Amino acid sequence: MAGHSKFKNIMHRKGAQDKKRAKIFSKLSKEITVAAKLGAPDPDWNPRLRLAIQAARAQNMPKENIERAIKKSQDAGGEAYEEIRYEGFGAGGVGVIVETLTDNRNRTAGDVRAIFSKNGGNLGETGAVSCVFDRIGSVEYPVETASAEEMVEAAIEAGAQDCESSEDGHTVYCDVEDLGDVAKALEQHFGEARSAQIIWKPQNTIEVDEETGGKVMRLLEALEDHDDVQHVYANFEVSDEVMERLSA
Image 1: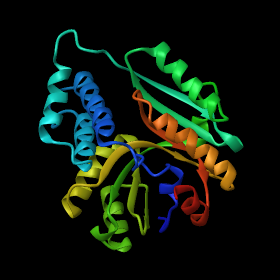
Image 2: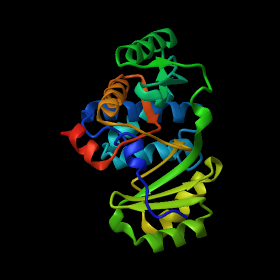
Image 3: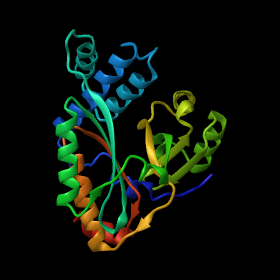
Image 4: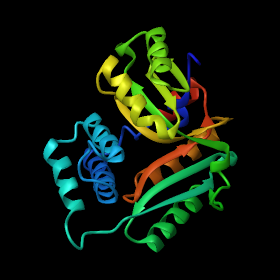
C-alpha cells in the first residue's frame, strides 16, 4: 500500500473550498433527494443515501436540511433528476470527467459544452476519458486520526485495496461494491470518516506547467460553479510551488 499521494491536487482541491456554503448545501441536498428516491428513504437500508448523508454531515449541513431533502424525495410529482456524465479535455490534453444531476438534459449539455469551449477545452465521446480512470470507493480521514501504519493495518483488515497518507490526511481505496462495508469497518476503529464516496481516480497523471495549470483550474472552477454539476475529476498534476502561485 502506498504511503503518499498528491491526489488532493489531482482532484482539484476536492469540493472547491471557495464555494459558497449555500451552493454546497444545494448540491448535497440534491444528491440526498435522488438517493432517497431511487432507494429506500431510510439510510439503514440504502447505502447510497447513507453515504450522501455522511457527506452532508462532513460539510456541517444542518440536520433539518438533511431531513427536508429526504422528505422531498417522497413528494408526489416532485422534480425528476437524471444522472449524466460528461467527458472532455482541458488545456494540455488533461482529461476531465463531469458528473451531473439535472432536470433538463438539453440545458445541462449546452452549458457544459459552452464551459469547456470558453476555457480552452472540448467535450469528447462517452468513454474517451473514463477509460484512463478507475471507478473506486474512497474513504477519507483527517491526518490526526491515526498514524499511517495504523490506518494501513485497519484498511487491510477492512478489506480495502490501498491506503495513502500525506499531510492532508488518509485516503483508503476499495472496490465500489465494498465501500459500505469498508467505511463501516473503519468507522468502528476511528469514528465517522471525513468523507466516503465513489470517485474517479486517474490511472496516471499529466504534469502541467503554470500556464496550462491555470487554464485547467479555471475550467474546473467554472464547471464546479454550475448548479447541475455534482463532481469534477481531472488527471493533471502541478508542483506544490506552482499550485501555491495559482491559488494566490
